[in-house]
Image (cartoon, rainbow, N blue to C red; front, side, top):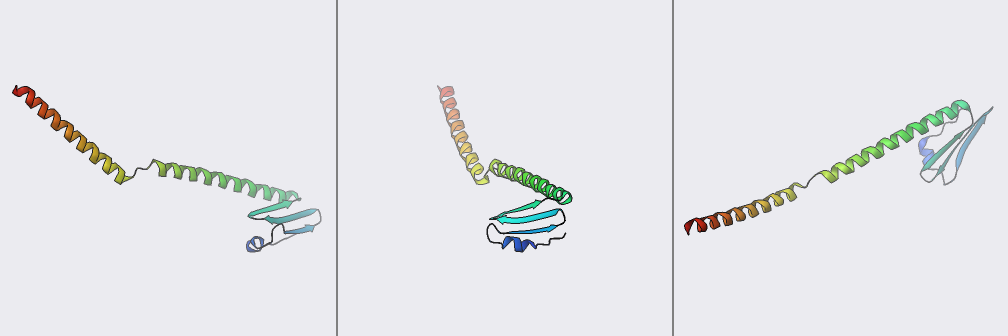
Length: 112
């Protein structure tokens, strides 16, 4: 049995439409429900192939989610350079004022 279905044809199917075929004891049905394509197969070799693609798809989905999470975490950890500049400028001004006050108080104390 051979059932050839172009991918673009599956995406153009109306909701809940399906392709199906049978040869001997082998059965296959491919359907689309919105963005989900579902494949049912009753032949052992087809079933193994469907399970393989399902595992592969699941693995890639998990990897994608992991990488997406890492990317978002990395973006959140990165600092804004303009923000750091203004924090540094503020701390520098504050330290300069405090140092000046300390020096003036020391001179007044030593001068008495």
